[in-house]
Length: 193
Image 1 (cartoon, rainbow, N blue to C red):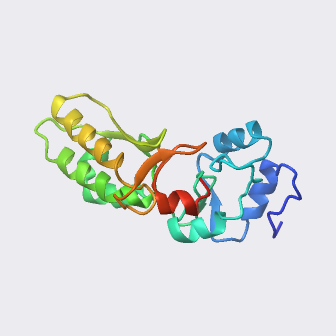
Image 2 (image 1 turned 180 degrees about the horizontal axis):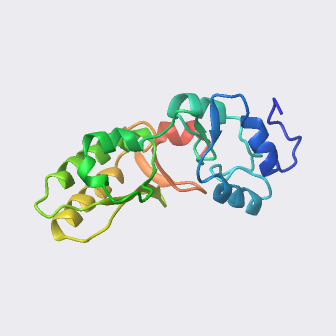
């Protein structure tokens, strides 16, 4: 399958797998769950307000710009944000082979990095389990709860709520859309929200 055009019909999961063959992108580790959302929307991309069949026309541009498409169905073949943070903060991620999940756009990377740096310096260390966007907000989950860690995480989540997840801008930022995202006005417009 060289062209994702489905002629208005819902693409099958097998065709999505075939579509990725020989390309510089692949289905994300969460593709099966995302495909369930696509099925619930009768084949429409879950990251768009308007009804656009999946894969949406912007997925290739998004992959080039962000190493993943907005709904995380596709990721670049080399996309893996985890090593970036695990190399900088190895003590935060040493949790005995447990899979650590990341799911946020580049605009929040500096916020997450700053939070990791602070968490890494705590007297009572925590281990990172998951860092993701959920309902337009940043979420950082750890294996234990401490007041100090909670304060750092709360500060990061508050900063992210005022920062475009896509580009990092802090001007005219709002959380909206069918698939709620915290974007600046320009990125909301670019993404058809």
